[in-house]
Amino acid sequence: MQEVSQAVQTGRLGRYELLGELGRGAMGIVYRARDPIIDRVVALKTIDSGRSGEAAASFTERFFQEARSAGRLNHPNIVTIYDAGEAGGQAYIAMEFLEGNGLREMLDEHAPLAVARAVEIASQVARGLAYAHEHGVVHRDVKPANIIVLGNRRPKITDFGIARLGEADVLAGSRAGSPKYMSPEQIRGDGALDGRSDIFSLGAVLYEMLTGRQPFGGAEVVDIMRTVLQDTPQPPSAHNPRVPAELDALVLRMLAKRPDARHPSARWLYRELRQLEEKLEKEPTGAALRAETPARKVSLDDPTLVMGAEYPAPAEVPKSRPIKRFDDRLATVAAAVLVAVAVIALAPWRGSPPPPAPQTSAPIIAVAPPMVEEPPAPQSPPPVAAPEKPPEPTPRSKTQARAAKKPPEPAPVAAPEPAPPPVEVVVAPPPKPAPPPPPQTGKIVLAVSPWGEVYVDGRLRGTTPPLAEVELPPGRHRVEIRNSAQLPFHTFVELQAGQTQPIRHSFSN
Image (cartoon, rainbow, N blue to C red; front, side):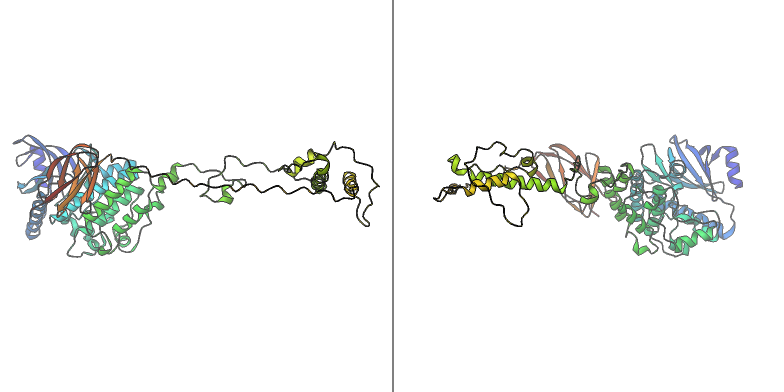
């Protein structure tokens, strides 16, 4: 690092003025510098030129090749590279200076992050990786230290162009690289790595954001690599009950050992994360509800223990009535029978059919029998008690005597009440269904080839295909369709309630 030391002493590296040191790693130093030509503050990354001979030349060539690859990327979630060069035997890359917090520092201070925030960060990182993969660039070193979260909450991926250079050093056991976030195929040293290796690394980052712990660990580098190759981590919900089952499955798929078992592309992963992000914005997850709802105390008197959880518990459970003795119940039944016999026997003297017996419960008849005051009966011989039967109550004996002392002619029997006239039931015709309310929204129908991200009034509504239509309130709306490989298309639509307007666009190759 002799040349770097001389640059620090002079305060310049090439045309750049060194303003201070931002960070130091095994492969070089990152400076805060100023480009005096356009008066712009940049991050100036240098690499160690302490190598000599053929290895140094190959190292520098690979450095510039990666710098050229990353320099082609222009995406809001990827750091922008402005320049690359060599001065005084020292290679450097000038890139966008980011003012924000590193994800590594955020996790060290606030882990785990809120579920919705972790999904939001992972979604935007996946979006940036998808753009890089579609332009032939694989990052190979996705980790919290290489993700910067800006003040507007937007994450940016850094260190394009250096990660691939550190791969051989990692496998040799040096400090460069991050085995805890490397994919199994990267640890094995497979020659051709594709974007699914970055998906694995992002899965390890998302796991740490959700749980506050890394999915793979070990005391030594060899132990860490063994766990990455052999062990399957527990679902994130095992460490954070607020993580929903849908997110558990997504993270474990990202961390699959075989590349073909993961998401087929970062673009695919971005769409799944974006759908989950929209779902979390609308309603809390079941795990969050369980964590925030206090547990209800359960007692043996709780009616839900019998009804089941799907039935609502009554507002108040009525108290049970005291159980009457058997003798009291027998007396009540006897009194009810007595009342019925007396009403039938007194029908001739009353001159009219007895009124129907009131529909009352047994306790009411027992408390107030209607035969307490009855008219004097005509003289009659004393009743003859039935042999070998228990004596009956006195009121019942008098009633039987009066029934026996009837005139010789047959007693008139009360004619049965005439049947009530039939009631004609007129069924009213069912009411006509109310006409449906007039539509309150309009609709745009999309036909985009081959695909595009649809923004309405600056808000992302989805990707078409599969998105085919978007409902919007009446009024004027700005519709923009973006394709990472082409210039964006935008137009304005004026919608009325119930109106449908088609939008067709084809991105030329």
